[in-house]
Length: 271
Image 1 (cartoon, rainbow, N blue to C red):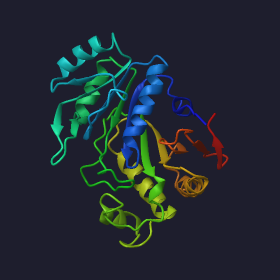
Image 2 (spheres, rainbow, N blue to C red):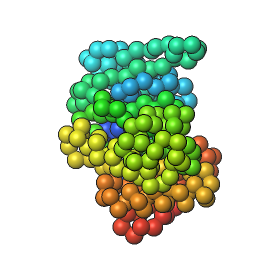
Image 3 (cartoon, rainbow, N blue to C red):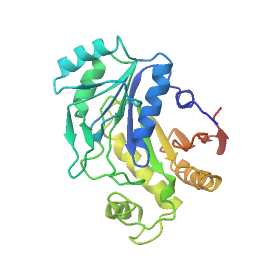
């Protein structure tokens, strides 16, 4: 089933989408960018941390500059050719590998770029997770633009049932402190809901205006994972901290995608 994320998120206007959490942030960012660009919107993908250098199938062009004025001018030129591209301050080598990463901008620079009105949408990966499916943020994280209009917290459902340790969770000790789940215990739906609520409420303090908050439960690759996602949705819904909850599998070719309706407390397929 191929669902439209921009439809369920009602991304009809303009804004800054900040993606935090773990377990599919980059995949979600580029899927949103693809859908928005194909709908005719002008889209920039970037980061306030570091991401792997986008592939050509993810982003047709990349602007590298540390100067805002140059970035704005190059963006105007690039938008004559593409509806979507990426930008960052510099390319950096990942130690011990042949991989390169894109180092992004600080949140204030992204706010400044937004005020230049070049783009309909700026999509920001605003958190790093060491390629884990679950994380807790340190005091300096996440790095959110103050003008964020949509905050999406991502969690990978494949971590349910795994042991709470640094092999499965980025900053496992912080996760334990925030949720009460002891190190070495099995990660359950209750602890994931508690962590997500904590992270979303923490992020709210960094955003200067009203925003839509979304919990995106990724890696729902089978009906069992969908049911786990539903349980998490019900638990976090009781905390009244999110506006929308999506249960999905970004890597599945069929793209399983559901929306937990907060009012009816039912899970519905996204058409």
